[in-house]
Amino acid sequence: DAKTTQPPSMDCAEGRAANLPCNHSTISGNEYVYWYRQIHSQGPQYIIHGLKNNETNEMASLIITEDRKSSTLILPHATLRDTAVYYCIVRSVNMRFGAGTRLTVKP
Amino acid sequence: DGGITQSPKYLFRKEGQNVTLSCEQNLNHDAMYWYRQDPGQGLRLIYYSQIVNDFQKGDIAEGYSVSREKKESFPLTVTSAQKNPTAFYLCASSIDADQGPYEQYFGPGTRLTVT
Image (cartoon, rainbow over all chains, first blue to last red; front, side, top):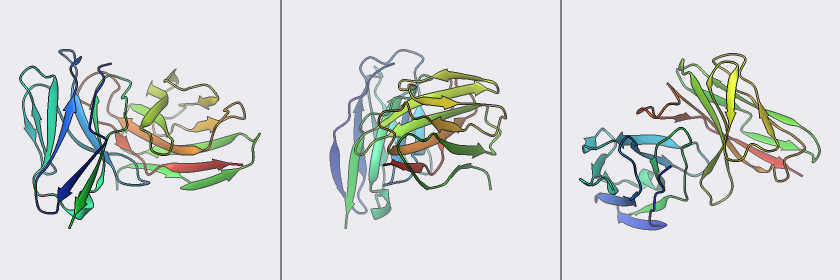
């Protein structure tokens, strides 16, 4: 399984875009990149996934570099309820959740 | 209302007792998973099942057992052999367990405390 590297914490002002980076330099050609988030004491929530192309849904956008070695999750207008731990995962059967990035959205 | 249910939310047991955590899904998913989360840590896979009557060990299966007699249900038993059972336990399901683009849906979790 490809490993991922994320910053341990980030802050973002309410209403601004939150850009969460993830490095996955050992990703193989058929592995998807997934993003989940976990609000304190709850189960993780699926956000978005992608293979090669950029993806957008109602929650976020996912930008994957052309060489697929890194990606960025974008929350376009962060709210206080987006405060959570965000996990970037390269998928195989065993989804390995690292420590993630703790995003704090501040008023 | 489709989803994954785990009960109870909080569970307390004495050391040396086996305890079974329930997980039920009505999403018609083939694959189900159990994870453990310790404070400040990510999730670690305990067991997963791709189909009824079949399951595989994850990264930390020692001291745990599972069964998959029905598609909807994947109970986890924490045995007395598990050295540090106190943790947050999360159940998840997905359409399939292969490498395809199948996201996992998580239940609300059960917080187990063993004293």
